[in-house]
Amino acid sequence: MALIRCENVSIGYEGQTVVKDLDFSIEAGDYLCIVGENGSGKSTLVKSLLGLKGVEKGRILYGDGLKQNEIGYLPQQTDAQKDFPASVYEVVLSGRLNSRGLKPFYTGGDKKAAVEKMELLGIRDLAKQCFRDLSGGQKQRVLLARALCATKTLLLLDEPVTGLDPIVTAEFYQLIRRINRESGIAVVMVSHDIESAVEDASHILHLQEKMLFFGTAEDYRKSRVGKKFLEGADKDTDGGAHNA
Ligand code: ADP
Image 1 (cartoon, rainbow, N blue to C red):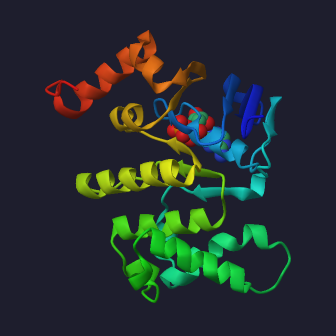
Image 2 (cartoon, rainbow, N blue to C red):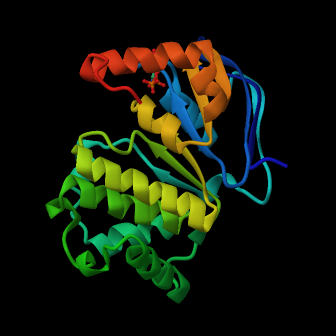
Image 3 (tube, rainbow, N blue to C red):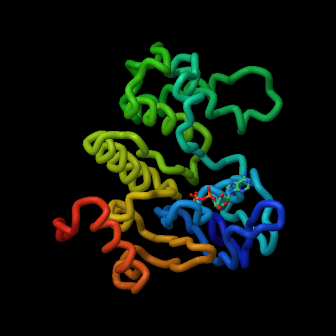
């Protein structure tokens, strides 16, 4: 049984369908990149996967012991988050909120998990610092540690490298690859960066009102849709100078 299975899913706002006929599965340990132009419905799909938005048609099934509240989510950056007046430790620990149910206090296990994730991501020495004083790359590591506190199974990242410089971006991608490979945690990432997506991901979902492509990254590279989108990305970024 897949971690998540979308069966014939359509999603929209007030009767206006944004994406339709989505049929795909996410298996344990997969690394899926969701790509597509702006406004193609990527974030809308993410909201539905998290159970924050209902579907118009079809159904989303969760299997392999995954519950909706056990998805580790790293949301798109907002200014409000950037100025969050809390320590790094508190932000990471808040990743345990979802699984804590109605218990009023964090348990020893919650605190241990927060420290472990900070260690894993190399941010333990930042624990007492104020989140809002960190660099963009450090903030993303903290939010990644927070997301890891919420899951053992699936991370969902919505455009996680927006605004980061190329070196910090490369380091962040490397961390994600490591977490995916070493912990076997499945990764679903909405990405604008198609070249890195194809390099790192095991699977690609390309949205444009419907599912233009779903399959392995290798097959995507060879597909008409993939070739066209990759060529376009090349022209946008460096005038086609790169010959990857
Ligand atoms: P992407 O993440 O691919 O850029 P979105 O999922 O954000 O795309 O948006 C898909 C479409 O849904 C867009 O046309 C957008 O205007 C519309 N949309 C997004 N959020 C809302 C909302 N809260 N209410 C109405 N329409 C929305």
